[in-house]
Length: 259
Image 1 (cartoon, helix red, strand yellow):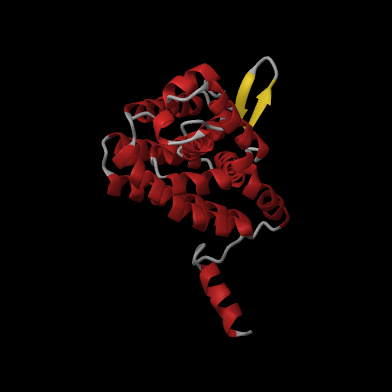
Image 2: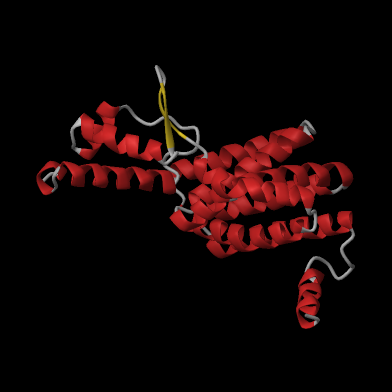
């Protein structure tokens, strides 16, 4: 029994829209991607083209996709900017939030690395390998800006390879903050610390090898080791106490006690 047989027109539109939402959430359709044509989608979902058209219109009304006359329908960055924009300004205005971002990255990206090692498709692994090769190339030619940008892209691809809609949604929601943070901190570390570029490259190589070899615990440990390295170096840069970034936990606890 096809979708045409199971539901009336409204039900079919709702069902198609939910399937499209899934493609947005699981990373099948990424920000900036062009949706397949109405004809292709109608065949895929086994519905009439007007059903697909109405489902797209509903997504467009919510700002999730945008029609460009003569070009097609494209995924917007609504999921990305809806949460990230105010945080981007807050981080700019309050440098102390860097530690909170790094703490968040350690938990979130440790988990995404773990699940990427478990669930990455062959296409995901190919993209991870390609970005790792590009990271090696940029290090070899000492292009620090390109190296930091590739670093950020690699973290994004690993999150997508986790194939967990909630992790991906969280990562995408704060992607603007994380991407800016990775790029700025990555460039800063590479410029201000003579030994940092080689250590960062080794950390990423260890991480990617664990994911490609499908060793989840090693992947999580590699990611967390990488984040800890960044936390320590950023702490040295902005003057955290010698006890390291975790001293912020003690400071916050003391603040709570004194209320």
